[in-house]
Amino acid sequence: MAPLPDTVNEKPFKSRIVLEIQKQLQPTEAFDAVSIGQQVTFVSSSGEAQRMYLISNADDQLVFSSRA
Image (cartoon, rainbow, N blue to C red; front, side, top):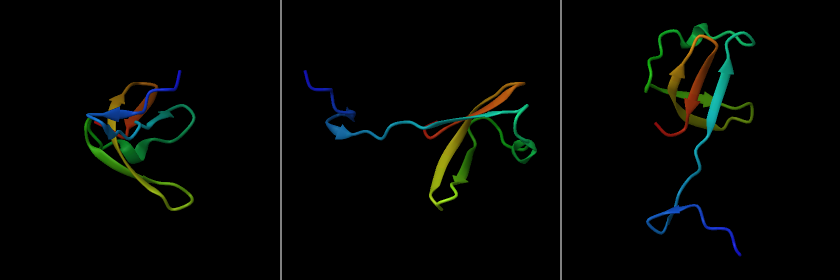
């Protein structure tokens, strides 16, 4: 059986990217003013930019998603 394509309404659907930042391992002060649902742009060392949204701000971690 072939795997099902990642589509919505017969159109390709981009997979979601999730980024978790553990507060005890990395400084997170740069995100203190960011609210849930607010967009942030991360840039990789290769120069690729990815827009992500803050979806969780727990005591121990921040979670960003490429889809709100």
